[in-house]
Length: 363
Ligand SMILES: Cc1cc2nc3c(=O)[nH]c(=O)nc-3n(C[C@H](O)[C@H](O)[C@H](O)COP(=O)(O)O)c2cc1C
Image 1 (tube, rainbow, N blue to C red):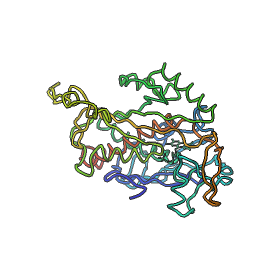
Image 2: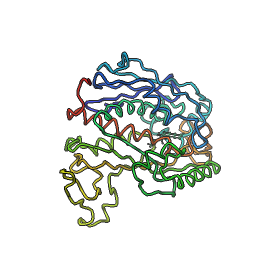
Image 3: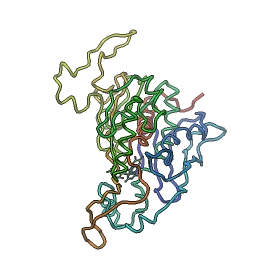
Image 4: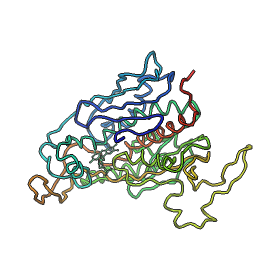
């Protein structure tokens, strides 16, 4: 399944950046879930382009259309098809530089793999725009997870070299939508905004780190050995363009730790077995421990920059220099925050349905 993910709650993404539309088909969604286009729109608006100077100036309403699977305000159990139309399309820059491979983008690999037949306009299938479809699926997944009290939150913890410590959940909930970089530390957010503006002025871009948290996770989600919780989460998160690293809990820092420091001691709280620390990030043996799932995602700096770069014209087979014009995000991180949240929700929902925690008919 190349454009689909999930075993029980399966999503299939379609569309290209400058094609007619982008959309998602959700199969396996239980019947009877009350959901409206407004519920989906709230999530879509969090990643919409053109809302701040830190994002691409492409202006898209990104208004969801429900084509199937929702009737009288509830899911029917049939495949749900959700789409948004592409309206603000300007392909001329892409036509002009069609064969000039953007360093860091998928132009080269797409050209080689599809023999030049791929829709290259706006990055085609490799555009960040495709992630709007992930967010629509995430909106449905979040609603389902809400039925069993599971909450997914994501927030920015680094932009370039400006980093913040993990904050209290209440602070993240309260602050994340209050600034355009989606950082719970409002002081650090100001520095991040300035850093992105500076990079943009220099014709450059910045990357960063997004942290995802899943709260109230039941113990036992995940199917070893090839359908582990962390494996499936990582696969879904790597489907987000520009994601180059995924770590759970203490992540790569485990390599420096001693076992005595890394192991999370088991303790009893309110009659349940929990751990005193959470270096495991809520997953052991590929199965949820019941502690919060903590996952961090490294996002690379936007490849399309106006600074001059060396590249190749794959048609004439000449080395050329390239300045990428057009409308691009100087930093992908803020717009990827709701996407990370959505992909985590989709995978958790897939496992929760598989485990029978969410019934086939919601009453
Ligand atoms: C929300 C979002 C927005 C993005 N915006 C841009 C953009 O404006 N310009 C660009 O060159 N890449 C952008 N990207 C990243 C490219 O799509 C991505 O780097 C490219 O497809 C190559 O894939 P890779 O980085 O995963 O290897 C965006 C990604 C996301 C998730």
